Image 1 (cartoon, one colour):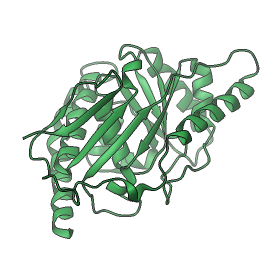
Image 2 (cartoon, rainbow, N blue to C red):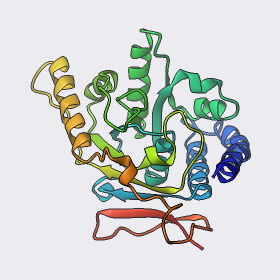
Image 3 (cartoon, helix red, strand yellow):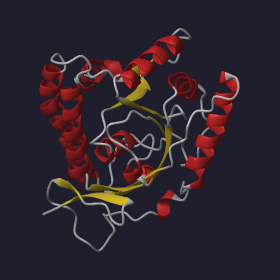
Length: 274
């Protein structure tokens, strides 16, 4: 287990170095570095493949890749971003992340150059800057992803939602998509470095429109309640019950990840193929 986990981490590091140069270079050729951001999808899918992680998606067919949305997701693992980038590969997408990621070698520079929204939690003035940046991206038809919990929980249960992202949603006026992620905590638990193979389930909820019949504060509060309820309704807190590929009878994947077609219009899977 230790040897396999070490090999996986080594691949992720080398894979990051490999894609870092092209992503950084292409980030200078269009206003929002969309070409560079699309390359990051290959980085994400390659890491999922190398770690034996498949992604199963439900509810994505109800969304239009050409429309801008504000996505709100629970947060259980560092692999959440990789899984969401693979699932939303057809959507122009940026995510809101902590400012500390800017200091990471190679990855931090790519995050900054591709216009991900970096938030300094210790600065109150950041709220205005974040709101401005989110509205700018949405105005350019680029969707934005928030993790309203702000950090990863220790036991898989939802943490209290922070209001900042919901204020941005009210100000922007675009539909909000609640996302429930199951299984990622068993892939890479918080505080651990040993990546395990398995499956991550991503469920996209019904778009929630912004209310315009009251104050902004009331609209923010109502939106937070709706999103929290939608995510919680599909959340599986018993993460240990999810199957792991390392203990399953089937052999591990040995090829590049492939997006399978939607089944009955609702479900898509990303799996490795021979």
